[in-house]
Image 1 (cartoon, protein in one colour):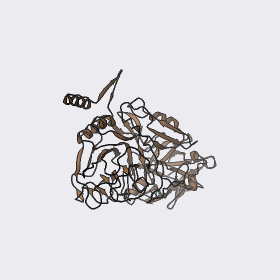
Image 2 (tube, protein in one colour):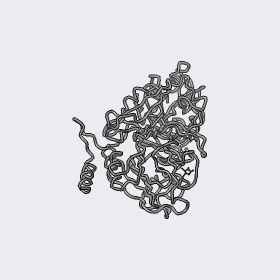
Image 3 (tube, protein in one colour):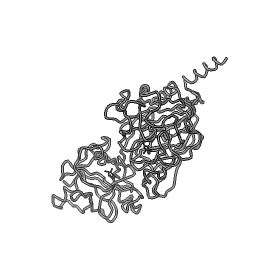
Image 4 (cartoon, protein in one colour):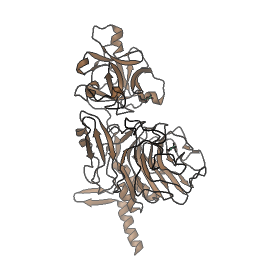
Length: 509
Ligand code: AHR
Ligand code: AHR
């Protein structure tokens, strides 16, 4: 009897399909974890429902124009997020992700992370910043959705989660990340952390980490890698510092898995979220260089930060979940098959009037004070200056820029100074500067800009790729990468849309 029930369950599990009227909805990742006996206790995604029956809110956006919010739900139960509702709500203003809802029913929602012992939080309220709602466009089987683009200084947390593993209880974690968005800062994590935002010692965390970070072990090559943040150390092995089972991650979309059992056993797995299966990088005993056995998990949930609110990392999160119990490899393999079938693809980062690579352009301010002023530079300082076709050549060249594929992401743009070849507009401390390309990853990302329709309806607004809540803005005739409200005077919301909208034309020179 019991074996025939088991067989029937395995059959439905393997098929993973449930007919609902005319349409067929596939079992989601959390249906699969449930079938495997390790149900999700937290399920987060801004791109899609993680249960076939889930039709509630996926996330909430907060818009800059009037500080009102909107919940974004799937288009249908089990389906892809209604990105069009976000686009309509956020039209002609800026939006951030204010809540990532828990789909598991446990109420384990993620919100702006509070200060921690490592960092007091960076926004004016002392919390971490919230992510731009448009920094990480994707498609799922062709349908548009948005991920959560974490820049340094931003992060989400829930320090009062329920149902998550504590102490040495077992759990599983998976997440889908952008394999091209990372850095070496601590710590782009998703998973289990301290409930007081402090570093409470080895074994007080069990989270997935993605990036270049070193803190105990890495995979082979130059990175990035999927590692486990177990507190005071990032691991993908318990005894060797370079685990050659894991090479540098090269796929655009990454499935990352970390799981911890209650019997001195844990594992790290990963793969390409768009094809193929998961590899096991490590499965074995806990690290012996600290009190990692038994574990002292606390059950809070972090996204984009370390356990102590170390908030210097960057990365993109599309979906993820935490389970109760140690999922089998077989269950995770079925989750990976579901992820592949979700059909993640790259979304468009640019909108509005076309910006042409290879062209030379000038950018005219549109604020009523300043419609004869153009984005220019004096030495390293980016400013606006009044320029006409009868201005002298050097002034015309100061206001002229060559459009290149973005140095940090070729889907967007970099702007090279016509009169200073090899120097580009970059942000540093959110001021715009013209600096020589020094070949670093930080420079290339600081110098990468995406274009969207002008916030005031004129021309283009130019958005930082690496900090998509920041835009080209003139303020007292100086150029900044400003946010629509923020800690600096140049973040003023007064005339933000006008100051951040530029009419692009052929270059003066
Ligand atoms: O384990 C790496 C990091 O170390 C943790 O995320 C953080 O809490 C501590 O600073
Ligand atoms: O402009 C913000 C940051 O400031 C840049 O990414 C970095 O170069 C500087 O620290």
